[in-house]
Length: 164
Image 1: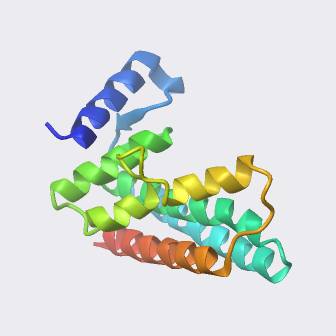
Image 2: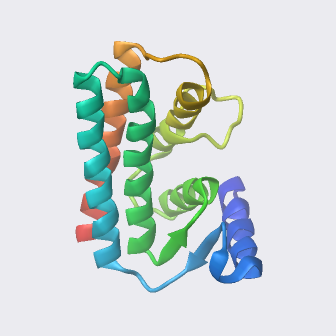
């Protein structure tokens, strides 16, 4: 069993123990409408990102871009019948769905979002955490463009996955 599959199993068991107020991952009926709602929220975060960037608040874009990505992943999860309330569980689910070739997000792309390797410091999660919890108030143009491109790519994959 892969590291992601082990984490996914842990997430499912965690949620089962916690019940309706879980902080893990539960199996639900696939819900296209709810998945589409997550896509709309991801689009909203991209709009907020542009608003912040134009206003000179590029450092705050790390959070809005991260949540555009995360909402896209939640949409994919719901398409396959999973409801997540835990970021690590969502990321593990994406790795497993990719391993099973159910989604077209490849490992390279997933590693840019959240790495199973804690040594990888170049992820959207790490950038968002550094910007949100650190003292920096701006990020480089290069970092912004990479993360914005990543968010758009993941959102497009989510749209494709939910529609098909």
